[in-house]
Figure 1 (cartoon, rainbow, N blue to C red):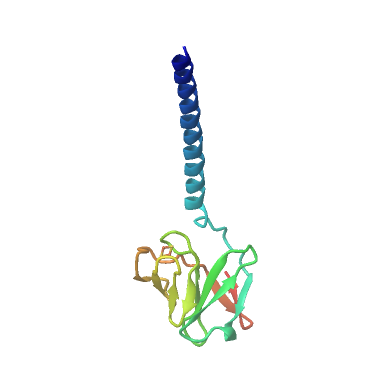
Figure 2 (spheres, rainbow, N blue to C red; figure 1 turned 180 degrees about the horizontal axis):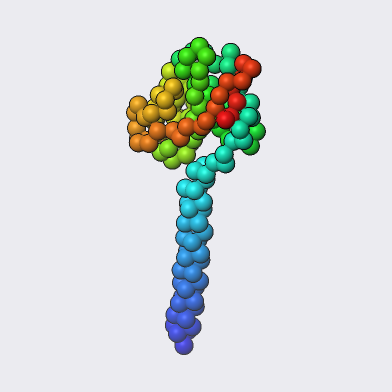
Length: 144
Ligand code: FES
Protein backbone atom coordinates (compact mmCIF):
# COMPACT_ATOMS: atom_id res chain seq x y z
CA UNK A 1 0.00 0.00 0.00
CA UNK A 2 2.74 2.52 0.93
CA UNK A 3 4.75 1.44 -2.07
CA UNK A 4 1.74 2.06 -4.32
CA UNK A 5 1.26 5.62 -2.92
CA UNK A 6 4.95 6.36 -3.33
CA UNK A 7 4.83 5.17 -6.92
CA UNK A 8 1.80 7.34 -7.65
CA UNK A 9 3.48 10.41 -6.13
CA UNK A 10 6.61 9.79 -8.21
CA UNK A 11 4.58 9.66 -11.43
CA UNK A 12 2.79 12.95 -10.62
CA UNK A 13 6.03 14.71 -9.68
CA UNK A 14 7.83 13.49 -12.78
CA UNK A 15 4.92 14.54 -14.98
CA UNK A 16 4.94 18.06 -13.53
CA UNK A 17 8.69 18.36 -14.07
CA UNK A 18 8.40 17.27 -17.71
CA UNK A 19 5.57 19.77 -18.32
CA UNK A 20 7.65 22.55 -16.73
CA UNK A 21 10.61 21.72 -18.93
CA UNK A 22 8.42 21.83 -22.03
CA UNK A 23 7.12 25.30 -21.14
CA UNK A 24 10.70 26.49 -20.58
CA UNK A 25 11.77 25.17 -23.99
CA UNK A 26 8.93 27.00 -25.72
CA UNK A 27 9.80 30.27 -23.95
CA UNK A 28 13.47 29.87 -24.86
CA UNK A 29 12.78 29.27 -28.53
CA UNK A 30 10.48 32.32 -28.64
CA UNK A 31 13.29 34.51 -27.24
CA UNK A 32 15.77 33.14 -29.78
CA UNK A 33 13.36 33.80 -32.61
CA UNK A 34 12.85 37.43 -31.54
CA UNK A 35 16.60 38.00 -31.21
CA UNK A 36 17.24 36.70 -34.73
CA UNK A 37 14.69 39.09 -36.19
CA UNK A 38 15.84 42.24 -34.37
CA UNK A 39 18.10 44.60 -36.25
CA UNK A 40 17.19 43.36 -39.71
CA UNK A 41 14.37 45.75 -40.48
CA UNK A 42 15.23 49.38 -40.95
CA UNK A 43 12.78 52.13 -41.79
CA UNK A 44 13.71 54.35 -44.75
CA UNK A 45 15.24 57.73 -43.88
CA UNK A 46 13.20 60.72 -45.02
CA UNK A 47 14.77 62.65 -47.92
CA UNK A 48 16.40 65.91 -46.89
CA UNK A 49 17.22 64.72 -43.36
CA UNK A 50 20.68 66.07 -42.39
CA UNK A 51 23.01 63.27 -41.28
CA UNK A 52 26.41 64.91 -40.75
CA UNK A 53 28.46 67.94 -41.85
CA UNK A 54 30.60 67.04 -44.88
CA UNK A 55 33.63 68.71 -43.25
CA UNK A 56 33.37 66.27 -40.31
CA UNK A 57 34.11 63.26 -42.56
CA UNK A 58 37.77 62.93 -43.67
CA UNK A 59 38.23 62.25 -47.41
CA UNK A 60 38.57 58.50 -47.96
CA UNK A 61 37.04 57.63 -44.58
CA UNK A 62 33.64 57.32 -42.97
CA UNK A 63 31.73 58.49 -39.92
CA UNK A 64 28.89 56.90 -37.98
CA UNK A 65 25.69 58.92 -37.85
CA UNK A 66 22.21 58.61 -36.39
CA UNK A 67 19.19 59.30 -38.49
CA UNK A 68 16.30 61.09 -36.74
CA UNK A 69 14.40 57.79 -36.70
CA UNK A 70 17.20 56.32 -34.59
CA UNK A 71 18.65 54.08 -37.28
CA UNK A 72 22.44 53.79 -37.53
CA UNK A 73 24.05 54.83 -40.81
CA UNK A 74 27.59 55.20 -42.08
CA UNK A 75 28.46 58.29 -44.14
CA UNK A 76 31.57 57.90 -46.30
CA UNK A 77 33.41 60.72 -48.06
CA UNK A 78 34.47 59.29 -51.39
CA UNK A 79 36.13 62.51 -52.62
CA UNK A 80 36.50 66.18 -51.69
CA UNK A 81 32.90 66.88 -52.69
CA UNK A 82 31.16 63.49 -52.94
CA UNK A 83 29.85 61.06 -50.39
CA UNK A 84 28.03 57.76 -50.02
CA UNK A 85 26.11 56.20 -47.16
CA UNK A 86 25.25 52.72 -45.96
CA UNK A 87 23.21 51.03 -43.30
CA UNK A 88 25.45 50.40 -40.28
CA UNK A 89 23.74 47.08 -39.63
CA UNK A 90 26.05 44.16 -40.38
CA UNK A 91 24.65 41.78 -42.99
CA UNK A 92 25.89 38.77 -41.02
CA UNK A 93 23.75 38.85 -37.87
CA UNK A 94 22.76 42.46 -37.35
CA UNK A 95 25.40 44.04 -35.10
CA UNK A 96 26.35 47.69 -35.68
CA UNK A 97 29.57 48.25 -37.61
CA UNK A 98 32.00 51.06 -36.74
CA UNK A 99 34.36 53.07 -38.94
CA UNK A 100 38.07 52.32 -38.59
CA UNK A 101 40.14 54.24 -41.15
CA UNK A 102 39.04 53.14 -44.62
CA UNK A 103 37.20 50.11 -43.18
CA UNK A 104 33.97 49.41 -41.35
CA UNK A 105 34.50 46.78 -38.69
CA UNK A 106 31.86 44.61 -37.04
CA UNK A 107 32.61 44.01 -33.34
CA UNK A 108 30.60 40.78 -33.13
CA UNK A 109 32.36 38.31 -35.44
CA UNK A 110 35.00 40.39 -37.19
CA UNK A 111 33.51 41.13 -40.60
CA UNK A 112 35.20 44.03 -42.39
CA UNK A 113 33.57 46.18 -45.06
CA UNK A 114 35.05 48.78 -47.43
CA UNK A 115 34.06 52.14 -45.92
CA UNK A 116 33.63 53.80 -49.33
CA UNK A 117 31.62 51.07 -51.11
CA UNK A 118 30.09 48.90 -48.38
CA UNK A 119 31.56 45.78 -50.05
CA UNK A 120 32.69 42.87 -47.87
CA UNK A 121 36.47 42.73 -47.41
CA UNK A 122 36.44 39.96 -44.80
CA UNK A 123 33.67 37.58 -43.64
CA UNK A 124 31.78 35.92 -42.14
CA UNK A 125 29.38 38.47 -43.72
CA UNK A 126 28.93 37.70 -47.41
CA UNK A 127 26.64 40.53 -48.53
CA UNK A 128 27.53 44.24 -48.83
CA UNK A 129 25.98 46.83 -46.54
CA UNK A 130 22.79 48.22 -48.13
CA UNK A 131 23.38 51.69 -49.53
CA UNK A 132 21.39 54.69 -48.33
CA UNK A 133 20.84 57.48 -50.89
CA UNK A 134 22.45 60.78 -49.83
CA UNK A 135 23.55 64.08 -51.35
CA UNK A 136 25.45 67.16 -50.26
CA UNK A 137 23.46 70.35 -49.59
CA UNK A 138 24.97 73.51 -48.09
CA UNK A 139 27.92 71.62 -46.64
CA UNK A 140 25.77 68.95 -45.04
CA UNK A 141 25.23 65.34 -46.08
CA UNK A 142 21.48 64.82 -46.26
CA UNK A 143 19.33 61.80 -47.05
CA UNK A 144 18.05 61.85 -50.57
S1 FES B 1 27.14 40.28 -36.93
FE1 FES B 1 28.77 41.28 -37.96
S2 FES B 1 30.22 39.72 -38.28
FE2 FES B 1 28.58 38.70 -37.31
